[in-house]
Image (cartoon, rainbow, N blue to C red; front, top):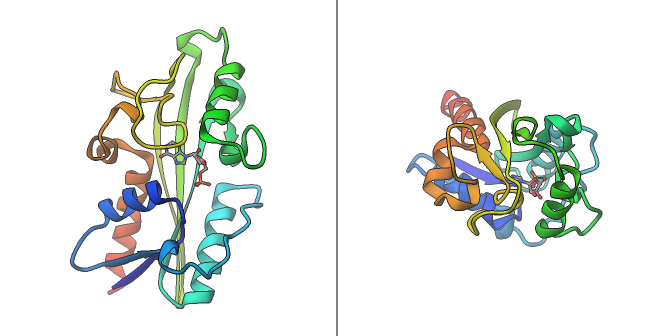
Length: 195
Ligand code: IMP
């Protein structure tokens, strides 16, 4: 079965491809379709953005599409940055800018109040199908960045049950526990049910 992952983010594509690697699925990403314009992620929810990205990519390619939209939700900050995670410190913000802004927002906040969760929503869109699945991982925000693997807020996020941040884990370790892995396991169930 041909599947398009509607993302240009190489880190994300790698995580997803790794998680759904199976002879049953032949996975492509938007990096294989360079002429498709990037979707504007302007919906007010992760769900809205995931569906928008998946529908736009499916409409242009006709290939069954998975699109993920993910947000980091900090309880002390009333679930911010959430849907604004990519542009928390402004349009064209770098991962380092966003991490620095998050550390400023949580400056002086004690460890017991630094809890947060990652929430990944995956939309599956194809002929006669539009489904949404979700995966979450609870954890906490470190006081300083640790590790250099992964991307985004990985150097700051310590998943529950671990002493390491996501960025201190190998891709295999992150994929065993991550929000995206949880969402993808549900997406794979949906794909298997489609045959
Ligand atoms: P996106 O819109 O789903 O690509 O994600 C929004 C932002 O959330 C990204 O720019 C990253 O900063 C962050 N993000 C998404 N997934 C992860 C992850 O697995 N680890 C760390 N940060 C992530």
